[in-house]
Length: 215
Image (cartoon, rainbow, N blue to C red):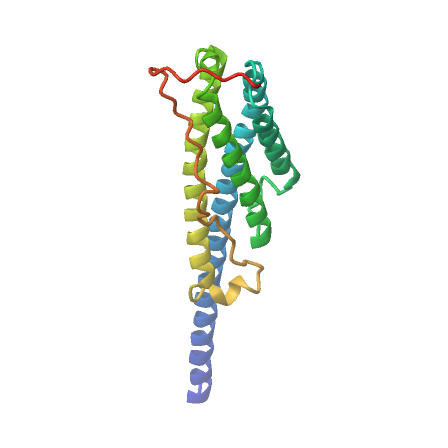
């Protein structure tokens, strides 16, 4: 065998080695992107679950509060309308949104509901009979727990999206991310006053002022 043939064989072996290593690297990058994307979608599903849990509590909360004499109906209407607005924002519960505008719309609707609930619970302070109602106390405790879970799951979602987006932008993963349809995902942003959990803790030990009758 002449030196030329040996040289060609060595070159082919080197090229084959490079191809195999590149294929393994790309395959590893692809699998990592898939895992990170699944983590984002799973975190999003949890976000949807806790928000749905809050929405499911509202009808009973509204029914309980509406039984109080002279309760401000406009406050109840605001909560009911805000809940309806949330229901009109249709997003896939099992796949995190890829459109930032869709997530902003979802966040805005949930923020309006948070604000409406906050105002409702402030008004409740003026109705001692509600603060003594065991059904309301139970609903308040469930709502408090749900608001805490919302905060936790939103944080988990943002962390999952951050890890995914970093991978999409990083070399060498970014070389295949675009070709295989892995695009960056939007995440929740801080909106002053819009997404703060409503103050659902009450001071049941101190008497609240009695409701004043309407003239």
